[in-house]
Length: 262
Image (cartoon, rainbow, N blue to C red; front, side, top):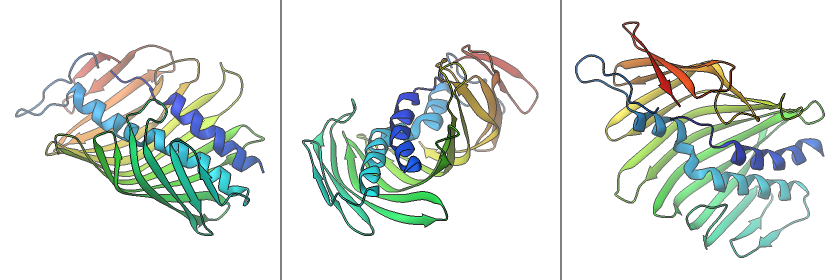
């Protein structure tokens, strides 16, 4: 079930960051009194921030533009940006962006000081991506060494996402995405963090145990593990030992191990 579908989005995002730094095919097995973790729930847990990924990439580009200190305004068919000393406001014109549904509304972005790191916070206020309404904040802290081919960004989210049917999904917590660049075969990424999702009356607490890792030459997470707790049920998902395959295992509190196909 779980493929690393956001590689393209992450590297679009990172292309702008580098400029700045340089200048289950089956449901999980039920356990206990009706407790289970389904394939749909795993998808929700792992892909919630896909909703904002296209906008995240544009924000990185706009921050890159502001780093030159020469641009005060930018306008195209999709958005208008007004820069100030403290940040910028991006207004989207009900346009399609990087294959998403129409994006509409304004985002306020405030610069922050985090030592030698680059940081900014985006504030969503009734911001629409298609029929999905987003409220809350996402804070990005970017760091790394472009000359050494390493880079990382940490995203802290406090988001509420309202779907077309008025159901609400929230995400609170922090994820760190790290990349080491070499050639295609040797370039790797890793994901770590702690975050909590609420959806359909359930709360899911997620923590990476061993950093989730993979390479640019494979579409799957190839190693690492994470724990997922849902309303008292806790399972561990293990993505393997580095081999590029669609296999993972789920371990339950009673020691039961289930093989799944991603």
